[in-house]
Length: 56
Image (tube, rainbow, N blue to C red; front, side, top):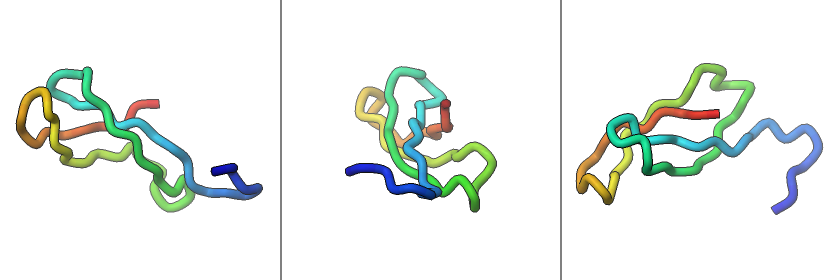
């Protein structure tokens, strides 16, 4: 999908804080969320839920 002019959402990569290899892509609104995103996601390599932090 093409990006529209004035689009405030950007694609970010969330990297696992435990192994550093597994990542998940998602989008966030740049205007509303200025700090780095931190979510709990499932890591299939470790077979458990871990904290994933935003990486630029």
